[in-house]
Image (cartoon, rainbow, N blue to C red; front, side, top):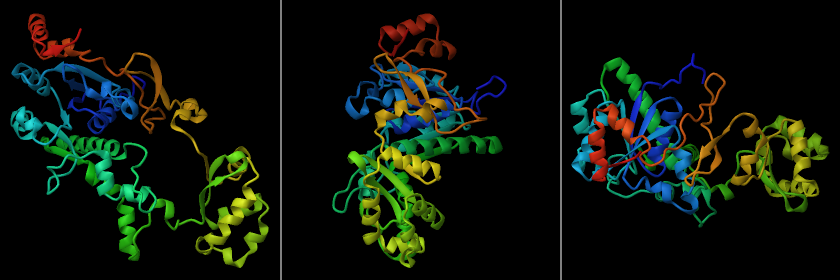
Length: 396
């Protein structure tokens, strides 16, 4: 961002005690928006750095624009260093199991007595209530919160293909922190913000809950649902390629029929309105599928784009690195991976003044900023060396 337009949360300091996805997402958004986010890691580093398989990209995805300090919070000297950092912070963010921060003396009630202006964001599995003692994961709340039921086929619940609740739970934590900062401007007081996986999941499936409230009929899982739109499907076409095609209004239906020589269907009184076509899907869709089957996905995409109709190629995640739109609009930025090689990562999906908030700091090495941060809160070089020698901190 240009110097004349500083990022909106420049000057805000966040100290985060987070790991995995939910808590780090909150810090990521605040950091992208200009906050100084200090990641407090254990001496061995955030476990996310060492994950394999589906977790191997977690750390570089959710920890850019942050500083790292490594502290052993099992030792009182480590907690003391954390408290000194917190004394300089506007926001503390954490996503440990309930009770962990209280045992360390780093819970909201304790810290608020030291600084009533402090904003404290807790990311949990459940908001306070009968379930709050349970251990939650994204997949756990998807199963118990209706999302897996809606995503899979009937009798075959299936988690969504990304960490939707972890990521959105962190987003709501960040939104809560932003709201608390605004409230503090008016009242002079901080507060505790709580965000939770289960409640986030319920928010996501609210549309299906309210469908039942409105109609008295339970929502069917997405693969077997009655769509609100008549043409809204994946089509298998020439050479086995697949493409998603849609026509979601009467105007789009007319354009679709004219573009593909389906004037007879356009004139059919049984297909006059979208709702008529929804009721006729059992016999209408086989006709459409047969009519389009010999065309290539590229040919169909060209016709749909030319006529401003909704369509989408069926894209695998790894293919997005070469997406022309993302690359032309600066939606991907160079990021340092755990092993040191550079890749590209998606930036936050919004612009400020026409620009995407970018990467100011690469994902930090373990304890990369320990020395400078400890110096800033009053430790001498000799004291920092002593903390290092006793394995209470780590860093250059």
